[in-house]
Image (cartoon, rainbow, N blue to C red; front, top):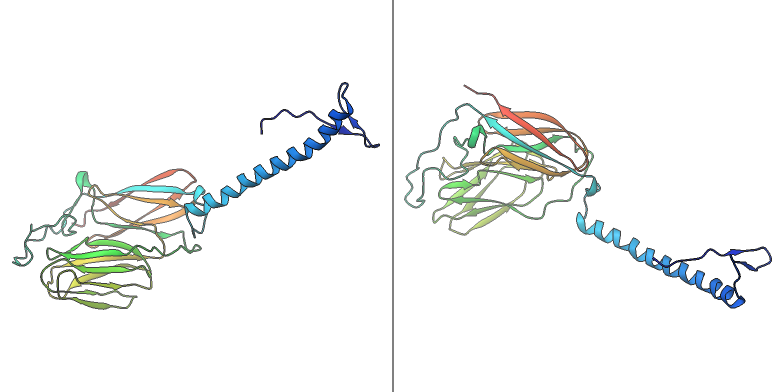
Length: 279
């Protein structure tokens, strides 16, 4: 508390043994004020101790590990070969726009050899942890007769919203291997439908029955540590508990590449995932 305190020793006969010459009044006052100070200090410490659980609970409610111990993984996916090339304009009058929508996975290569649109996730190392379900839905739009974005990641049982932003009908269908397939009809602009995948699966293809060139993919995992590589091939997996992990990058044309990483508290681990030239 910052107040100066003088030590008081009590002898066996109950008298106060104070250094120097002290009057009886000062002895009685000292014997009274010390318990009072102890009480004030105890109350103050109790209030400070109560603030810590509130701050910890507000940080990451439901997280199965102490977030103060977390580390991070950042990386880059690269590819120097040739892909299939951008898709041409489908020529649908009701879906005007450029022949290649930004983010279209058909032939998109990032800057400086980076690979855009790869799905990255923790494949091994989190099996003993259960994470709270992400509450925000993942959205795929039928826009300009494309699926935008064409690659998304989500947790098992998280909501997937399929939305028609075009003035034409779309019938979107998912064709998983381990989850239940579905087809949703979105006949008018603005229509939406919600679906879920109950089991992890990498990756689930999504297509449009009306417009056969429309295609996308969904990566379904049991945790929140997933990402899609950006225009330079970069990605980040933040807030991982310390440990050893197998990181996988998956691309619909090139397949999968893996790398093992070690995550340490408060540190950022860098990883590079490179796809060989398929040609």
